[in-house]
Amino acid sequence: MRIVKTIIGALLGVALTGCEAPDSQGVQTTVTPREVYEQREKGDVLIIDVRTPGEFRAERIKEAQNKPLDQIQQWVKELPKDKKIYFVCRSGNRSGQAQRIAHQAGYTNTYNMQGGMLAWRREGLPVMSGE
Image (cartoon, rainbow, N blue to C red):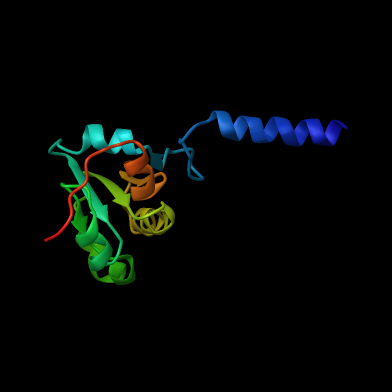
């Protein structure tokens, strides 16, 4: 019974931390769609959508730039170091990979948008489509 209580306590602790997923140094690496929405028009922010060009054309955040994850080695070193960089994808998986790769490349202000565009739409936040 003690083991079950310990496991439940640990799971509850994780659940109560919300979207803050600290990396190994205790730095927050995930943000909510609402946080990205509120930050998107600031001059020190860059939103990188790592989905395919087709996915990006179909639906995107207005301020986002499309840089597909499968080409990250070509563009990661060109990212500005003086901006907060928010990575976005469909569900948060590919953007999480991009955030980790950018962090390993020396970028300290990188964040994964939790839940991706699926969560963005659930929040009722505005999207663009087409060219």
